[in-house]
Image: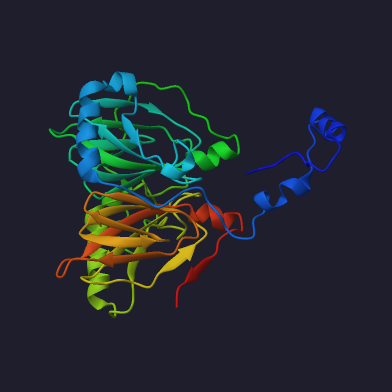
Length: 346
């Protein structure tokens, strides 16, 4: 706990310091700069079997016109009720029903969406229409207009990831007023016509140059690449792919990175930890993850969080089927600040 008054000082002296908005550093030094890395965030798992029915109930109880964004926020139990999954990241599950349209806005936090369930919805990013199929990743870079619509016949759910806590910590969080969704200016996105194969980029793009040439990564493409890699990789080599800007190789967003890991039957890669925090979503399979001292069992549809500097070890519990874990993290922000570090357990 932060202590701002030194009990050994004369009370009048301490009162003078406080009146001048001054405090002694020596009473708080080891809280501000502890000898070990610490975080209030804790490992935690949210089960789809628990949250799925609650999302459907939210869709029944709360009209989209009232909610604007119908989201159940994943709150880390260690953060005192804050709308945050770690000290830097926000996560929530959003649902949209057939025929609904979520209005358009833009904001300073970066956002990503991983489609969890259902078909027929779409996200429009600066006029580019992005189909939403289960497992697809769609990004909304900072200050890009975006909205959501639904032309299908079943509820669609996705996992929202944003850097809201990080942006709020520097007093830079801001969003425009909502406006009605507008018809998309394109019927498809660049992942369907310009970035369909690795190592190839268009000489000239038909899309506006926003600095984000790709905003959607279809799961069908990612899964095919993971399966091919898993078939050829030695048994002791982990199989994981990073999502990147295809023109620069940089993370898709300045503050958040995304990865997908394929765990072969029975596979349990060596435990590792880093200064970044990560949110995981189970795309396929079942297994368990040891995060620090916590052991979390998971299955398809579950979400769990790994706070920074916790050793993380995943294990695929299935004897004959792969498991696939998607994660988003704050690694790019940590690298930009010179605070990135990692360690693998021997």
